[in-house]
Image (cartoon, rainbow, N blue to C red; front, side, top):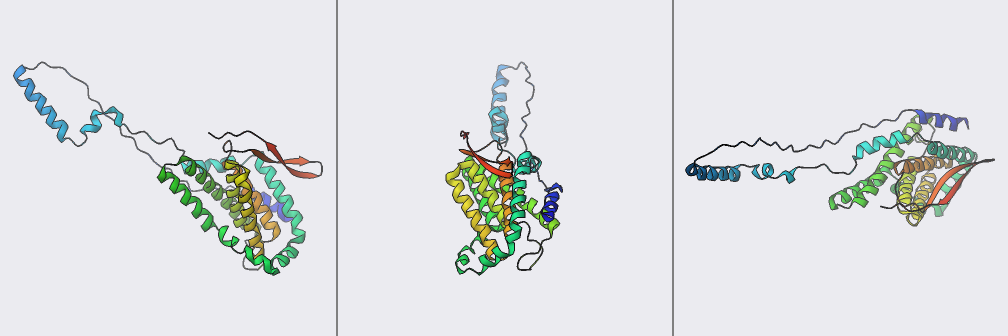
Length: 293
């Protein structure tokens, strides 16, 4: 428990992203004041033809002659600005509640860490979970969400780009928080390869993706998404890269990240929230309305 409390205190360490702002320019139309002057009838036709030649030859003649050509910036939110806001929104009661549940689950499971690792890693049937090491890797997770985000932007499908963008932001948030705690906790992996065992990054990123999908599309998508995230967590134990307590707290971080980036959005038929109980904590499920635009 002392180790867990030390891990939780590390969440207070400020996490910062190097944020690049997307600059957008605007075309400013300059208009000149009209002036009136009298001209002889003979000269008027020459001036008219001269003006026509100027309008034809000038490269920006159409732009200057049409106020409708004024460029207007897109209304889609800036991805990097939204990501920065996610870190600001991380400080909330919801975050504290979920991390508390994760800490309790991780603390309880520490007593069976060695036993679970030995059983999972030595059971032949568990070898079927090894693909989870690839599925839960940041290369696969970030690559898939970035590809979907790009396709949505290119095709003009705002729904796809919006959800993919939220998944990507949740992954960034989860990976950053996990990295900070890893450097603070310095727990040795079960295989002894390094001291980056607690918490599990594969698990946190996978649960972050699953949480966003569940909150955006409901439990029809959420159930298989969380099943896939659990598959990844099991694979990390089977490979002796993490203990059960590592993946338990990693899952909590992922849920926090996913919930943070989807505040006030999505198609949530059921709301999942942690609640305090006399003997500890529990998770409640509440039926809510759909707010899909």
